[in-house]
Image (cartoon, rainbow, N blue to C red; front, top):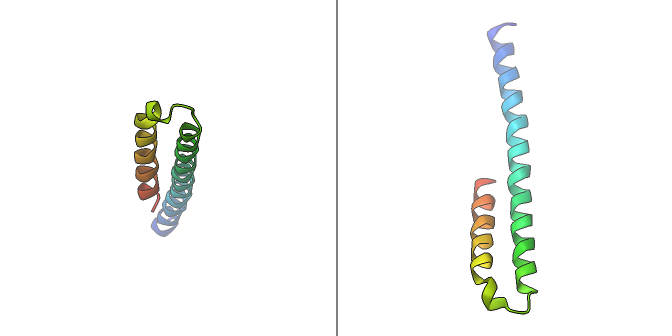
Length: 67
C-alpha cells in the first residue's frame, strides 16, 4: 500500500470509530433521561434528588461530547 492508501484506511477506521462513539454517547443521553423519568415516578421524589441531578449531569456531558 502506498501512503495515500494507508491514510485513507486510517481515516475510514477513525470515521467508523467516531460513529460508534457518537452512537454510544447518544444512547447514554437516552438512558440517563430514562433514569430521571423513573426517579420522577417514585413516591418520594425528594429522596431521588441526588439521582436526578447526577443523571441530568450525565446526560448533559454525554450530549455535549457527542456534538
